[in-house]
Structures are given as structure tokens and as C-alpha cells.
Length: 458
Image: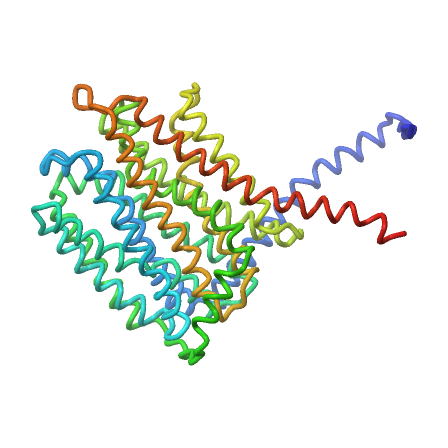
């Protein structure tokens, strides 16, 4: 048995005390200098790349902000839509989730087009489609036309994130891309913030139809700005498109990541976009003001989560720790949070739903992982392939939750608590399975490596 070695005691003298005090005084100054250096480095990057930030980063961040706004706005307009058009839970779930269906269907062709023609033309053209969809949604008076309008919106903003990520890869230094990804998701998530208290105030003032008319104008303006100010990317004449897609979809690393990333991020989007508000209303019994306040807090958490995850991934990468480990931790916390909600444990609802929303920003980690798996020339297709999985999962969760909840009979106009708990629990089982699928191959690989070390060294 190994013996413990005890360090000789240091005499407690006045000089020792003074030295400790000196070190304690120096530590805060070192920390301050470290943060000051970091701020100066970021400021230098902003100054040196000011033109690119104004002409590339901010226009695409604005497009992504609109995509988040459209994604989450139904949580606020669900009540007036249900009252005016008498929708059930299943109808509301389908109307909200068709955005994800159209969004998902467009991911593969959009990824190919982004790699071939660049993000400027693709993003500006698609945002025009989203503006048309918003106008149609505003003018519709029946479920089918609302469905078509919502689908056009989903299709029109389908390139919002992948086009922005592609633009960052094309025009910014590679070592700054992970942090810029986090900043873009953070700014884009401000669209979710806008879709809470500000949108609710406008909803009371002008109504949901006029609100979508305003969204159409903003979307068309963003399309014009991107088309006019973003630099043109050199077209990629690479004809091996199908070969590139096969390389992505036959890579076992992709299929190890995709289930976990999709199950957790897709669920976070689906809950924030609709079912969080329904849970808060029908399970927690909150009034509309309290529900909107919760949605606002969730949107802020999403935006801050994107920034924190981007910074954490950047710092850990410098220390030799990849984003995979951080994704494992974040998704484990997400699973535990949902279990807490289902079991109705006495924790603050603001905190629990803030965690749920923040996990929606874990795309920062997923796309950083994908960037390590595939070369830059496949960036658009690889991001599109993973985004397809995210959006498809969000569609399934959002729609299936409504179908499951609707199996119970409403009581006094509200579905019972057990309906929501059952729907959330079934989804949680799939997330746990995806987490195990992601983690255990790593454990087995590490175990084999440890077992082979002694023989290789001998």
C-alpha cells in the first residue's frame, strides 16, 4: 500500500503572512489584467474586421433573428388563434410544427446550393419567400391557408442559420469561427426575446394579423440588405455533390452525434415554441401575464446560453478539451431538468424553463463538432444535414405532443396535468436513449485503449 507523504509544516511567521497577503492582493489584479487583455483582443478583432462585421456578420445575424421570431411567435399568438378560429391542441400543434416540416425539407438542397452559389443569393431569395408567407398568414381566415402561410415562412427562413455559418467560414479567420457562431446564435436568439413581451404588447395594440404584416416588411427589408451589402462568394463548381452527401450520411460519427443533438435541441425548440406556454397555463395555472414573463425569461436564457456556450467551447478548445464533452454535460442537465418538471419537484419554474430554453443554443456545440468531422468544402452540406435532423425532431416533438395530449378529455376547457406529463415523459425516454448511444461508444473506445496500453508499452 502506498504511503502518504506529509509536507513539512511551514512556520507561521509575519513574513509568511505578508507574503500571503501580497499574493492575495496580486490575484485580483492578475484576473483583471486577464479580462482586460481579452476585451482588448475582442476590440481589436472588431476594429480589424469592422467591414466584415457590418457587411457579413450583422446582416446574417438579423436574418437568423427573424427566423427565431417566426419560430417562437406561436406561443404568444396561440390564445387569440384558438379563440378566434377554435383550434384544438392537435390543430395548434400541427399549425406550429409545419414550420419545422418545411424547414427540414429544405435543408439538404439548401446545403448544396450554399456550397455551390454562396450564402448571399440563397439567403436573400429565401427571405423573400418568408415575407410572402407572412403576408399570406396575416390574410388567412381558414386553417388550410394558415398552414400554407406557416409552411412558406418555415421554408423561407430555412437557410437563416446555415447561410450565416457558411458566411463566417468563408470570410472570417478559422480560429474565430466557434466564438462568432456563439455570438450569431446569441443575437439570433434575440428574435425569441422579441417574440415574448414586445410581441405581446404589439399583439394587444394592433392584433395578430397586422403583427404578421409588420414581420413581412421587416423580412423583405432584411432580404434587400443581404442582397445589396454582402460580398459575393466565388461559385463552387464542384460537381461531386452526391459524393459529398454520401460521405456525410455514411460517417458513423455523424450518426453518433445526430440522435442526441436532434432529440435535445429539437425538444428545446418545440417546447419554447409552443408547449412551454401550454404547460405553464394548464399545468401550473399561471395567467397570461405570468406566462409571457416566463417566455421572456426563456428567450433571454437562450440568448445568454448561446454566448456562454460559445465562450466555454472556445476556452475549452484552447485547453485541449473538445466540444463533445461539453455537449454530454449540457444534455445531461437538460434531461435532469425535464425529469424535475415531470415529477413536479419543488424548484423555481423560471429556473427550470430557462435551462430548457438555453439548451436550444447547444447548436453552437453541435456545429463545432461537425466542423471537426468534415472539411470546409462540405461545411454547408454537413451543417444542413445536421440541421435537418434538428428541425425534423422539433416537428415530431411539437406535433406528437399535441396528439398525445389530445388523447385526454379537456376538463373545464383545459387538458389534465397527466396528459402533459405523459407526453413529456415519452419524449424524455428517447432523449435518454440518444444520450446513452452517444456516450457509451466513447466509453468502450477508451476502455479498449486503456487495455492495450500495458502490452504496447512492454
